[in-house]
Length: 356
Ligand code: SF4
Image 1: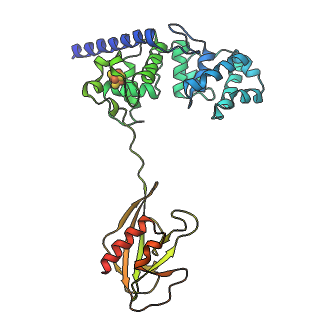
Image 2: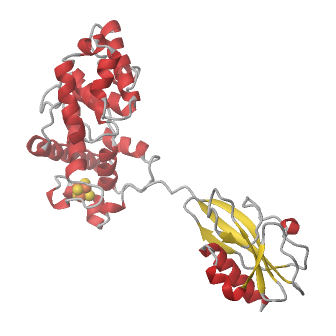
Image 3: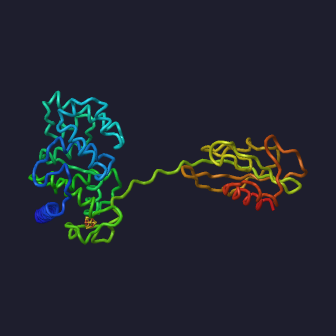
């Protein structure tokens, strides 16, 4: 048992060493980054806030502009809101800019212009969430914080072939990282994993041949690289039901109505049908009083957000009668001239078959 765990510690160390060596060689040069050393907390914080929801390339010019206008956190704290917001304009998600101002003022006023140097202290500041606090703590202060972003999630779930879906998998990713993050270079390690995810272990076509961790990657060994991370199950569509009424008169005419001018299938032709709801309802929605026969063959139709199950009731009435208000009788032979959506074409097909 002891042998197994010491073997796994050795394997983890080998992975860590391989990643750091790769980062030293291949890690991206970024304006806010200092390789093999501690970066300026202001620069790390500024870049991490800007990078939330935004790409590295989009952030670079804004980062340069902010450093020119506000070279340190005190300068940013002293700036007028409008000046900061104007400098931010175009970067989007403006709540980030407001939090940036609020955070700079707290750091300047309450901490003498020095960012708190722990993950917990950083987490208490406006606009700094769990990921950002861990990233700043590791990169700027060398704290052995566990940093997990989307790139790191992808690399770790592939390395270990962890098939727990996101976001539940985060606990397991954290456990793996606990065994990998080195005490002496936690910031470089986090940035190395981020870079690996951004440039080699990419979502759709990872370049495993160039990967420093390939020899220990379980997903690669199984040829299942893109199976990880497992996405959360898609939320099911809302299921609605309805009862459609297919009525033929003695002249082989079908009863049709027109859908409301707004909403799904607006203005299209339809056979009369009950309100689309959790339950199809009964014959109370019948458009005319007749002997209805309910079929045992619903038509299922998928809309973007809705799965509609339309049950069908059919009737054949003896003679021509005036159509109910807002409805019309249309010869079956002329149905092609009607704006009938696929859903109702299917319903009519099933209904007519049952009547013939
Ligand atoms: S071997 Fe391939 S799948 Fe595994 S971590 Fe490296 S790039 Fe990702």
